[in-house]
Image (cartoon, rainbow, N blue to C red):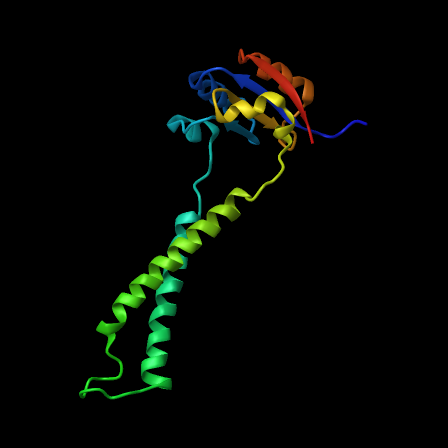
Length: 177
């Protein structure tokens, strides 16, 4: 049984080699590739060419929606459905609405951040083709990987394998779906 190819992965022993390989891969015109490291590498996001994320906009809109919901809920309760005149105070006394509005803003922003991050990252992901590689488990400990995916417009199995071998990796493997 011949499974479709997911991509070709190269294994590196140090972060400097991974960053250099990612830069050369991007310079070679590949656009669908990913780098995996056991810890954050500041230069790697730029080397891979990750686009700017829309997560800040999602968080802002979540906070705005949360704040408006908190304020309007209090306004509706105090002014429309249950108006009580206590000591001659106005029904729409906005200073008393500030604490709940603030807390609902924080709640809305944090929920939007969590669910937006999960959605943008494609999580939860219980299966990934790279999990089939026995050594890929070490990507969370001490090894670094660069995978050029088969959905890249420039992907040719033999050419990609030759290109990755030219980057002097410790190993190059084909990954099945």
